[in-house]
Amino acid sequence: MRPKELGALILLGALWGASFPFIRVAVPELGPFALVEVRVALAAVLLTGLVLARGHALKWRSWWRQFLFLGLISVALPFTLISAAEVYLTASLAAILNSTTVFFTAIIASTWLGDPLTARSSSASRSASPGSVSWWAGTPCR
Image 1: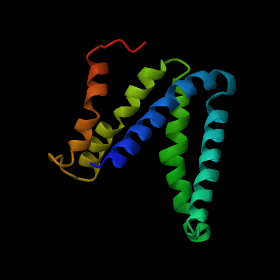
Image 2: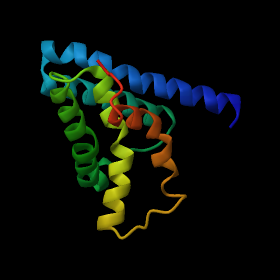
Image 3: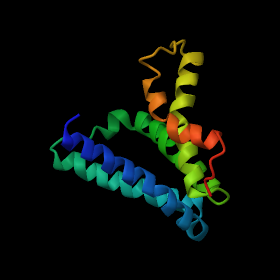
């Protein structure tokens, strides 16, 4: 991995991880639904601007059902559930629980899709292991 790619990965991890304390602070004030609406709307505006700035055409009319389904299942629903949970959980525990998504995705893919768990397919799961295992082992996360 080149230094530029490593820097981008570290920045992405910092941005991703930093969202949990902000959610924990904002949820009691805004509520989980309003917070998710603001986050998703802001992301939609920024990503639409990025796509247009790069000269790509948005094919909303032909893909709107797929965009809506994907947005609800992979963004709105998980963000709402995480925000609602952070009323009761610490930000660190919410972040660690979120890191278990990789494990559950592998289990679901193996079960529902018949996709076997191989060494290659489970490498992403192993990369999420340190934080998840420390939580399961009882490391304080308060």
